[in-house]
Length: 364
Ligand SMILES: Cc1cc2nc3c(=O)[nH]c(=O)nc-3n(C[C@H](O)[C@H](O)[C@H](O)COP(=O)(O)O)c2cc1C
Image 1 (spheres, protein in one colour):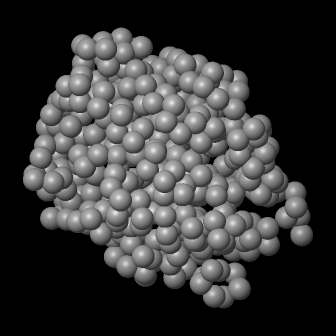
Image 2 (spheres, protein in one colour):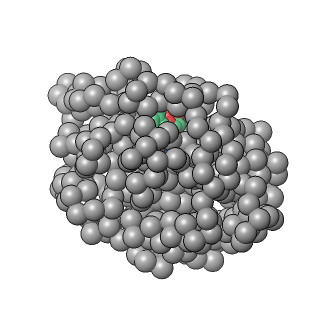
């Protein structure tokens, strides 16, 4: 077998990361936390522990503020019960030999009053409503509402909330955190021209649009140390009604501003016409994790191609990890992959969550 030749199976070491392979588990929301307490389900520790052979696990997005919750069953990391719930997860992953970062995720306008406490309005950089598609809620699909523009003081407070969430992540035993700056959620709403119409210091110019992302990452890094902080971006991703006029200009500036911080990694989702990986790789001196986001689960070959081309150090897989808890072992054995069951992805219980079989036939 040619398995030792897969670049995905080579160990990776940087100043801050020591990974047994270059296969990361991409962050994926699964909607199984308690919808009232936002404490992760007891099943969640099994789910992540089954996947502990990943070089690095990045968790599903976890909110830093009650208005950052995007839908039913999304976990938080702001109170002691949530910290205790996540401590169970990190303990199980570490006992299984893995490494796990928490994804810090505020959705901005991508939520609905029925998802938020007291039916509050979503907050966003600017009151720009999503018109093209509904949003999923516990009451089914609903039209988006127009979000409320956060004040400058609220934006500053939210940056502090990201830092506080990072502190809670460390208390919960995580090895680090990933700030979610991708896929049209709050941070990308600050970055994009069509969703940031502000004229305070968080808008108005390119530097203004970058400011929330830069200050949030700086605050998180100051709180827990830059070596425990990653940032995820998705340049030119039109998802969730984002329209970036100049992705190259925006992301070159963002990456250059953050490069001196000495972060654990930059996680780039490549999508759209702008070839983000090739363009940004030379500007980023640290670890780069790559991901592709297309209609079908990204293939093993696609990840190998990126590593072979030197475009990234580590590649993250999402959907393949939902259905293949032992993904590195399957790649090593050149074994076939299980296909994920679409309707079991979000919400529910054990089915479609912790019952995908490992190669040896047992649930991993
Ligand atoms: C069910 C599901 C949930 C996701 N949730 C998140 C999330 O919470 N945070 C995030 O940054 N990306 C999220 N993503 C995007 C994935 O991290 C990844 O970019 C995408 O699945 C493409 O990788 P793949 O082709 O290997 O699946 C999600 C994707 C899926 C399929």
